[in-house]
Image 1 (cartoon, helix red, strand yellow):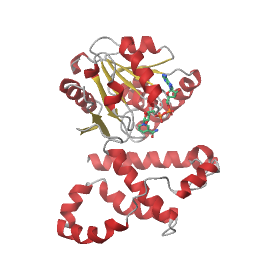
Image 2 (cartoon, rainbow, N blue to C red; image 1 turned 180 degrees about the vertical axis):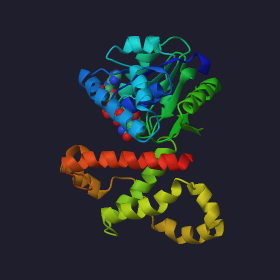
Image 3 (cartoon, protein in one colour; image 1 turned 120 degrees about the vertical axis):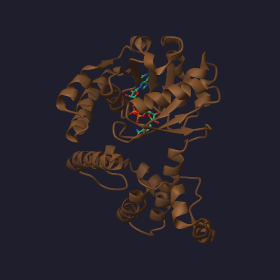
Image 4 (cartoon, protein in one colour; image 1 turned 180 degrees about the horizontal axis):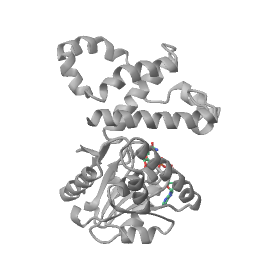
Length: 314
Ligand SMILES: NC(=O)c1ccc[n+]([C@@H]2O[C@H](COP(=O)([O-])OP(=O)(O)OC[C@H]3O[C@@H](n4cnc5c(N)ncnc54)[C@H](O)[C@@H]3O)[C@@H](O)[C@H]2O)c1
């Protein structure tokens, strides 16, 4: 299916990611279905979509009238067969469990029109595994968004063993059309590129916390105001050229040996999980939160991400 023929999109799964993804397609003129198996999630998604458009309009990305028009292009439904059957492009964003994804793809292949691209927002399940045993595997591709999906520009495109080049080319055109930036992953490795780099950072941050090298607050302050600030402008490989490969060699020759190579889970995280402290959703994880702080943090982080995106686009 070529980009000119794609007018209607179906987003399957209306949890954390689906509403922001649907809002993004609708913002750029696509008639958009957002489907879920759960009525409650559909109800919740309405509020999330309002919040997304409030953030985008508040950030000056679109007017109130444009936000209203975009909202009007979204149809929320529990009728997946109808949503997918009417769509010219489908992306699933259901829970990250292989058996759920496999079952959903089995349905999508039957429900979608022949030739419709079927994308997965999986964070790390190999696309090659999702393609196995299905008809037309050439049209199945990874489309990995970052959270919050309406603000973080990059979307990884992952080519499974059977994905064809035309599918990759079209999905990259779709990503450009919705104002996002595509990064292509040529080898279908677990975690793709973004999560491998993120998990390497989180493993070292947790190792430093486990070892009492610095507090959680200070580890985050140093990361956010140092490398985090820089990495939005200069990528890690560009940074190597800036620093000099000779300097990197000198530092890495003693430092690499000392970095965490833990293949298990940090003891701090294991203890917190045992205590039922899972993060924002339980009002406490590595940090403690009141319900008011959770609301304020979401608003503040949204405002800062909007400002950062605008600065980076200028
Ligand atoms: N949350 C993140 O930060 C994030 C970031 C990037 C990618 N992802 C990926 O996006 C996907 C979804 O993650 P999430 O955090 O939005 O999950 P979630 O659990 O918040 O939402 C999943 C939604 O899918 C629905 N669902 C479950 N089974 C379904 C089915 N068979 N058919 C239709 N809908 C079904 C659930 O009711 C729920 O509303 C996962 O693959 C995840 O790895 C998540």
